Image (cartoon, one colour):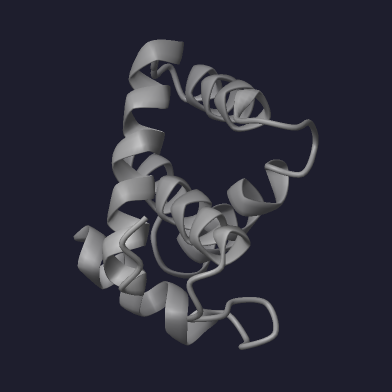
Amino acid sequence: MTMQAAARVMEADMSHSEWSADDTPDAIRARRNVLFGYWAGERMGLSGEALSRYARQMHLADYVVKGDQDLIVKIQQDFEAMSLTISQADALRLLRSLHQQALRESGCTD
């Protein structure tokens, strides 16, 4: 599934109260986290509802601690369980890239 397809699935899958198309920092961060979840889930071989569920779980994991470390720990643990690896540096680079994508998709310029 491409990232654009994942974004369409994500928007169709989540209720408006859970996912808003606005460009607030929280909405952009939520979009980034869900995109991160779709990316990771695809690499773990997830599809359909399992992929959507994993993407939502990734977003919720961001509320464990302030910053991105909770997402990094989750993806590293989940990848390890599937005999996959991702370095902290690579995960952070991907998060930055997906944050930029979320900004572009929201129409926000900052």
